[in-house]
Length: 194
Image 1 (tube, helix red, strand yellow):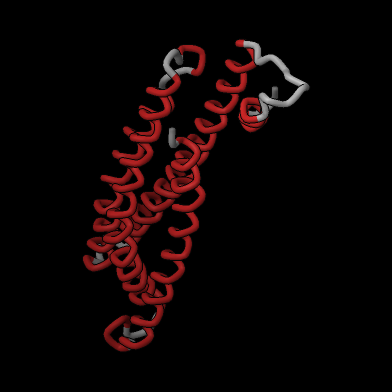
Image 2: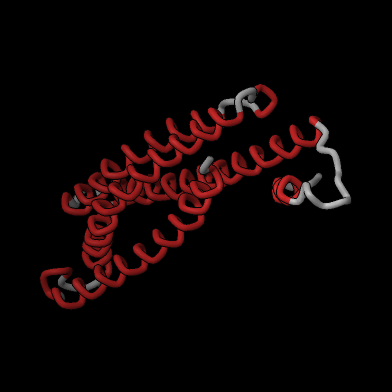
């Protein structure tokens, strides 16, 4: 038995003449393999998201240090840092809880799946609410910083261009978030549904 789907097909086709016997160790191995796969998927998302947040903090820190005399850039960069701190904290708490239980110690499969589903669902709900606030703010702040640094006259001289750039960033961020939700939350939540 290599996959849970094979066990499911075998279970559904028990009326056929060619019956195989499910051995407890095979079922346990299938379950352990599936749980490891889900945990690996969660860990992959964690590290991808955590790396992205470190890049945001590094970029904001660089701008704060480099443009220490320009209060507008310092304040906008600090706002980005303050905006992402709650996401980092929640991300670390939820994914630590999801990944801390080793596969070998799982005794009650149903309660483990419900726990994993609940933790992922809670983080997904938080992430959607966070993105609803953070994506527009990040787009506006990043546009403001870029226009202050690289466009003569800044946002004040090019309001239409800044609005267009901000809307373009928001559109790109929204599409990326939609794909992120689908790959890292919706599909895993459907697989963990018991």
